[in-house]
Length: 423
Image (cartoon, rainbow, N blue to C red; front, side, top):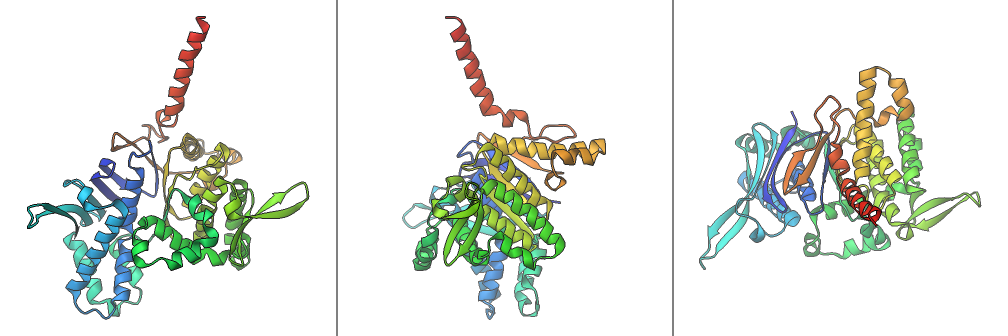
């Protein structure tokens, strides 16, 4: 059974309850609450990592109650870094995440009457009794556990590493040459002022970036035949979108571009590339790194279509489906009808192959690596979330969602055309 998340009165989201499935597409207007939902899921799925960090840091802690207090304090601060001060939150705010039926975490607002007769609000974190007992069992026996991460993954019913790839990635790419220096000179207070997911994204880039001195191709020699074949497919798809190959060398990020007139390669520093290249380069690097290391990952990608031509939006959607089909869970937030339409094609390809039993014909249209067997799709409207999958065996994303904006545009054009004909 999938995990379930329920959100009430948090940010732009008034009401949301949904399954956390293996592949989720989330769409809706700007400021509708898509990022809030994505961050809530990320927050709850990384609690096991927070507990691991505390237990490793406080390995000699003998006061079990103090450890639980530390866990809740860390989660409270993390929540506030993601969603802002509790003073601005509704008294009816709640975020509840069920890992299983009897294991859940609940974030809510509690109010106290201060001495000044003002009402003070604070974020309360509560675990279900079952989950709390399991956590405390790990705390009591942590010195006897060889693989603490595996045990925590079992308790939280989640063996996936969560990766959040936020929107606005090109700003981080623009600062590439100063990124190490800027981050290293920040004190803890300055880092805490950053959006939490953005900080985690920067730290992950800084961690893995030195591995790319040979570009994506530099990893191939260390792979077996099957992995090398899969990696080459991914590299080819990336090159068609990125229009070049990424290399991190001598502390500088560059993109080697194909110069077909001179039949040679030329390069440009990554902060001087196009906005589309800057937005996508680290999506690709992270996905490739996870795949070649066989990392079971839950990956949230915000607005993968940013600054991309429609054909490239189609290809990046296929690339994300490729990653899903090779063992990753995915959540995509998007405004783009091209991303939604491309996803529908991948869902429909799998359906047609199963219906007709003619996989070969479907493969000639699109490779099997990209077919999507199952996808959940939701639209956030009027501060609430609803499924936007059509009824029927195909389970396609509703055309009214994909074509909503263009339908309005075409309707307006028809009205103007009618006025033109009356002259």
